Amino acid sequence: MVLVSEINSPLENPQFDLSAYMNQRQTLVERALDESLPLIYPEKIYESMRYSLLAGGKRLRPILCLATCELVGGTIEMAMATACALEMIHTMSLIHDDLPAMDNDDYRRGKLTNHKVYGEDIAILAGDGLLSYAFEFVATQTPDVPANQVLQVIARLGRAVGAAGLVGGQVVDLDSEGLTDVSEETLTFIHTHKTGALLEACVVCGAILGGAKETEIAGLSRYARNIGLAFQIVDDILDITATQEELGKTAGKDLTAKKVTYPSLWGIEESRRQAQNLIEAAKAELSHYGDRAIPLLAIADFITNRTH
Image 1: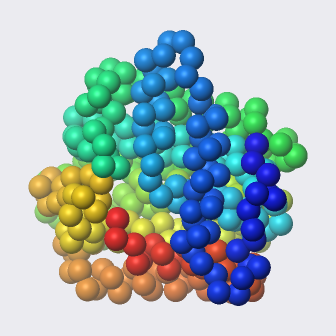
Image 2: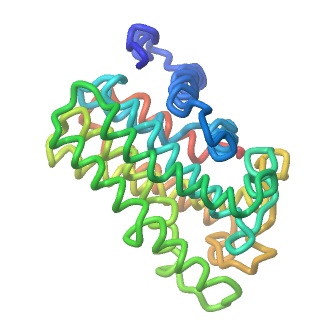
């Protein structure tokens, strides 16, 4: 497991460098992910799981988990297993989302999607394997955290990825494809569940592992819900404005699939304004933490300023 001493605290430098912070955390997460999933028999399924899990990406979800755990007084070691599990769950959702029966995409993170390399059958099983392993990994690899807190984390993860979260949002999203009368309320339901539920779990699980009180968890949940919805609004904007090379996946798919998006309801400029309002509301939830909240404040700003 990674030692905290391997990283300099971002608060040692009053001029906080988010890029350096993200790169440091990303390096630790990448190493932990690589070590978490060795290549064993039957090699084909492990190759497929590793292909998507180690394909890169911002690693925003595990970094959020680590940052929140540190914010409330925990350590990187306490949260790293859950951070890896969150990325396993997220990767599962991407593998399954790219399948022909779902969003039918050929590229993800600039590489061929899992089913294009290993076939649909193995891709489905790779997603299943990552999902189940995520819970095993949290249960067996979380050090120095009371068992009841680990149990709370497992329950939160299960809810976030199931019909009450990601799966439920995906179902409503599929049912809404091609419809022209999708309401703002339905669109918000889709995204607070399909995207936001897992982002919220990243923050809440980090807080639980670090020993946060219920009142703290409630405020951090509001922070997470706001950045989660802002993240999706920006995603909708980038689907229109960014190139395939910038996104690492097919651009313009929402328009091709005739999906209702925030820009189609509000226009691009109003969508940007709404995303910024959500980020400001999220940051307000962290005001009482002072300088300790600098990483989470900077991550909130990053969400609206990102280009992919």
